[in-house]
Image (cartoon, rainbow, N blue to C red):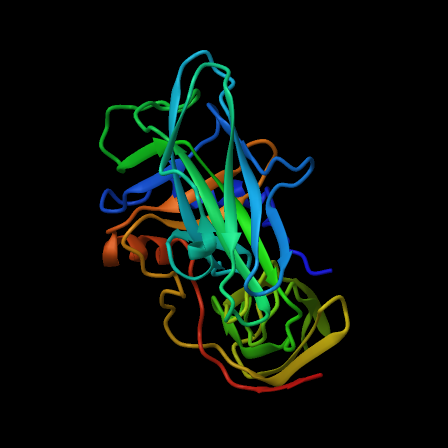
Length: 334
């Protein structure tokens, strides 16, 4: 059975910390829980897991609740799932790809005090769709304007921040039985004066992958554990190690995936690579959802605001959210 593994909740704290204190040019939007909840309507299901054939149309429910004594208006939109920079799922507003299969959702819904509303929608998979795993999302966002409890301002201009409340539910659509499941290790390099190893993995197949394995330098080994890598996606696994001498080292990587049924390896000379540069953060005209950390009943979500251009992305790279370098080596897979 194929599954989509959500990112760890504990990573949310680190991601939030990286966004605190950034330059005024970088307008960060921190999405906080507190005034509404959104669910699939299926007990115990934190996201939609839909197994269908191409050309099918299946009904589903989006359940929205307002536990407060005040009315709440929510904006509803579809999102496209992508691979996050360091593996895991990430979302951007979209009506294309799998996001375009979500039909019948309203653009907004108004909730009265203590109200609960069930919104029906359909997942309409086109008949020409290739057998593969796909990821979309349904986002619900409240009207912004007030800071949640515990957030205070000093009146001193340090950074521009907008706090809103938003929840995104993943919609994993498994179409047919994909014929190809393939993982490539594209490069393994040293970074940060030989105190980090950076492994670049690429999903060359048609299924969600969650590789695990080891990276070795000489007689020492370290564990690798990747969150979801979507079909066609690339992610970077960073391992902090005791600093190595600044010289070439023989390294190897071994990863297993597909529940241990498949294996890929890499071996070569480990060298320190050149200047770091931004990773594969997708371009978008709307907000970019960089990390999603599900936690019942409200997930924390960190968003990069649209329009930050080079100044904003530079701030991200500077605090270490994005880092990858080029390397060389050889790979083998089975």
